[in-house]
Length: 178
Image (cartoon, rainbow, N blue to C red; front, side, top):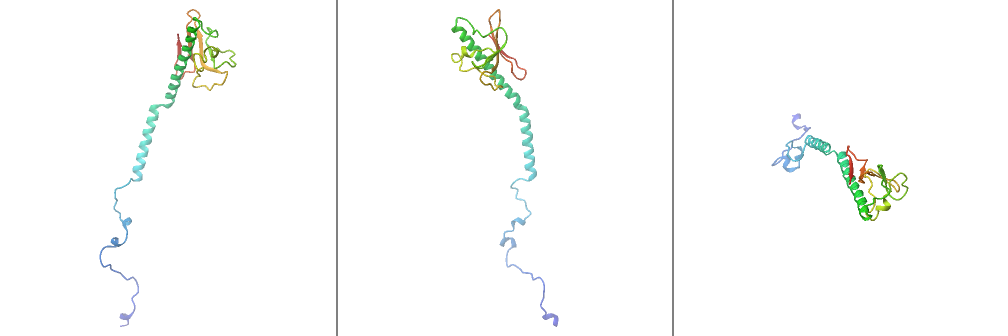
């Protein structure tokens, strides 16, 4: 009988009156059920990789280096045309005479009336009457007295003037003769 009156030791199981444990406590994080919202790490990595591949293809297709070179060449064409128009406007206003500095030798055009030794100085004749300032090749960083990056010459027999952009990119030849 001694056994019957001894205290029992150990775990005592409790029973709840109604419902489940999850009804009384927030244990939703214990659920293994996937809700479907959000993306897995693998899905995110695949999307990032696809975007990277597409961006690479677009950059190669656009070829920014060539596009920038073409833009600078377009500016050179405008500059060459601007200088030639100014020279011919000068000629019209001066009874058909071209500026005296233009020779039959293809020579670089001086930027302004500074130190123009060995260059064709047109600024005194053309600026500001015919053009606001002498255009400068887009690939140059010219300072006072430097070349514009363009050359000028005239044909000895016909008197036609040729302006050339020797720094043209991508194998382009930019010159205008009139």
